[in-house]
Image (cartoon, rainbow, N blue to C red; front, side, top):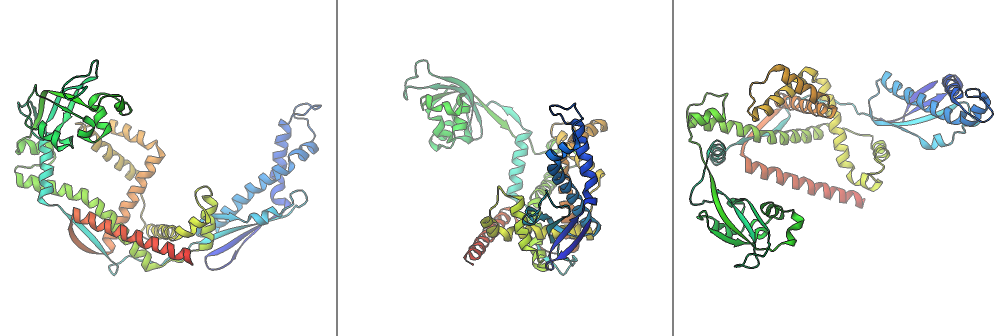
Length: 469
């Protein structure tokens, strides 16, 4: 076998493989002998069909199959042994392959196009400055969270007069008109949450109502949702049109959550692992928790800004001709030449970023170990069980949960990807110069939204310009 690489330019090459009979004959003969043992033909006992007939019937197809196997291994091993950094997969030259006469030729030459990765010289340092948004938590947000927590740990009461956030329980009766119930009409008892009623006129009547009082309404118009209306009436959404639009709702009881007192008992229930004794401390801890939740979104935005900065700084060249061919070859059903041309800038940025990520992971020796994956899964299981009041779970139970999750390869891959992302994020925070900017969450969402719209507009404009060319 003769195999070598010919460079077309700095980032594209051709790998040529020349095969002689010595390279494939043994494998072909072995496969034909196996087929001879299994062959069955009229006039011959099983396994006794002459090799000449077997070769005549199957020789060419076996030759093609075995040569392709040898080629795949040869090209893969050549790339590996010569440490060639390729993008995508080698693309066979189909025109050359179609010229082969499998009946007459004994020596074969095959060509594979390959895209080569560019050299990367990138070091993270403080000279690279990136905006980092630190999310601040306004008092109003903390107030709302406290309100929800007090409700969550509050007690249920049954007041005599309803208020805006109460739940009413009663009976819906189908009506012929505002005054008369429909003969043999539909009836159903269920809950009605006042705050979910969108019709202000109906909502106003429900607030301040008492058990025993009634009102006639159009449920679908009241809640402005077919799904919610059907649920209240105990029917399927597609059945709504079979009933009268008017129903009389008679209140039987009122339920209200009486908020828990803002005291040490509540602090202990809400944050059992923290020793909180007063409201100021509780608000501070809560603000910190909320900030961490918001900060996850800010970190994603930060990573995107880093990506943009590093792509701009490195300006990595790519084997564009090869990559366009490769994208079309590997996505024949989803992509067309026109689509590839139109969206290639986005594709190329993804290629470049993947190259930069791989470079950084290797340069800074970032890896995720199996024990780190297990620890992450164990912490995840603990957090899930804690939500259901199971705070003290035996280690063997945790191990069984982790074992079950680990049997799903897709889930394990997600954890690996998450941990790699987190380590890369930590690396950026450590090595780069962070230009910290404090910002409220609503303003942050507005900032990110406007940036996204601007980027989309620029991409559309660039695509239009490229099409005109």
